[in-house]
Image (tube, one colour):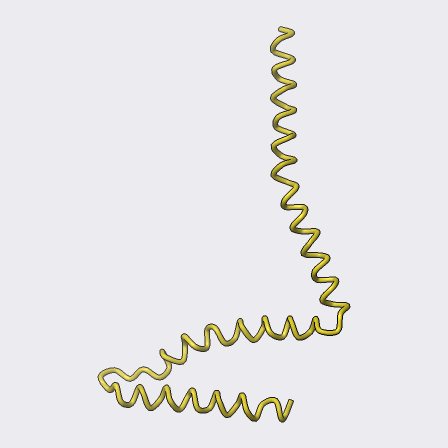
Length: 101
């Protein structure tokens, strides 16, 4: 019975070690994320970083959806014309937008 108790203690110890090994990277990641957010919120260019990320979330789906919006069944020329118009207005917006912002 003494052997089973010591074996049980060894199993608990290895379980604790395994949980510690798994938890350390997670804790480290959370700590670094908190530090990064604190740094970005206190530095002068943090708002630009968040603005860039939000722009990426908008432009990614927009590029995919533009093709869907421009598609006309059976008329490739009309689809091409529509996608050209969409991209033209995007370009005009990129040129004029910063002037008004």
